[in-house]
Image (cartoon, rainbow, N blue to C red; front, side, top):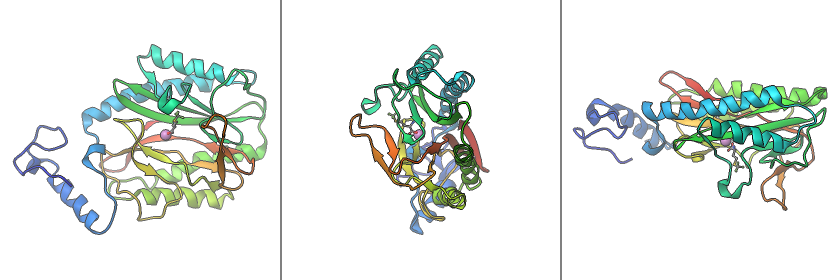
Length: 290
Ligand code: MF3
Ligand code: CO
């Protein structure tokens, strides 16, 4: 860890001397690092000003998903959802973060039934009764990022799919119970995985969450099959996503060879995912985007 001199300005941007600001915080992090744990770099710890800007971005993300929630129905194409996302985001002054991200061609990911994530909106994909769909929205506003996703049940959905969608949502609450400063991301990961296993479902291993805020995807990569007391230390000002992908059958997945993006369950079973963006606070957490 690179530390300022005691009388130098603190790295956090508070304008205070280091000895009056984050010195004790850094001592505590360093002690935990010495015990062999992974600790966050200063570059991913957000100050109050940055948190405010990230929340402004999240307001757009939430508004977009609220609109989708009100208007999604059988008979519309996923390209229609993409247009809603683009139009609302840009009208509110933001940029859809997925658009052109590593060559992604659309403004939002729409993943139906056995699609695990990164489904590409299309005029040819029409929502029908019984589908379950994940709509994954990400926004950039003035260089600050937000990211969240929700599941939608179209018309009459089978009981087993409905329960899968419900469990994927409950898994977030189980994970959240473990989000607090000076705990570890693995505490959250294990809580998610234990809960999902207890329901008879499986958690995707290869695709996970991420730090976010100043970039779309920041350190660390976040697993939901991790173990208690492992993975990165959580500290106040750390922002990351909880977004486990839950398969009804096996955890195995494969990627669409034609578009290079869409991920499916290997066994063709349905998959569900909800995503929230979470800030670690002094005494717990705050949900920034949902
Ligand atoms: N929103 C996804 C996430 O949760 C990322 C999608 S990247 C894209 O991290 F390019 F496919 F949009
Ligand atoms: Co994400």
